[in-house]
Length: 171
Image: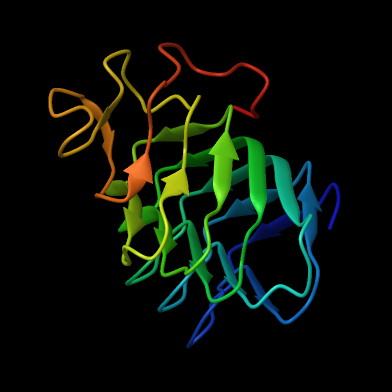
C-alpha cells in the first residue's frame, strides 16, 4: 500500500483501517487516521508470511480501539517501522502480543494514551532511536522512570531515544 489515505472506517472486530492476516505487507507514504475497531484501530497485523515487511513514512493518528488504538501486532509478526508518526491514538499507540520482536526506529510516538505495550515477556521489543514527546524520553518503569514522554511497558527497549522529533517522519 503506497501513497494512500485510509480514514474514518469502522470494524466490529479487528483492524479498523487495515487488517492483515497471513500475507506480506509494505505500507509507505500513507495515512491511517480516525479509524475504529475493538483491536488495532489503525492497523491489525497477524501472521505475516515472511520477513521483510515494513511500514515507513506513514502516519498512524487519531485511531480508536480497546487495545492498540494505533497498531496491534500478534503471532509471527516481525515488521520494521521507520520514520512513522504514531500519535493521538486511544489506549496504546502500539500493542504487541508477539513471540517475536518488532523493530521501530526514527519514529515519533507521541500523545497516545499509552505509547507501547508489550503483553508478553517472550520477546523484547526494539524501540530505540525514537522521539517520545519529551526530551527526557519515554516513561519506562526501569530504564527511564523519570521520562515524561509517552509510557512504555516492561519488555520494551527504548535506550537510546531521540531528544527532538524526527523531522523525516511525517508531521
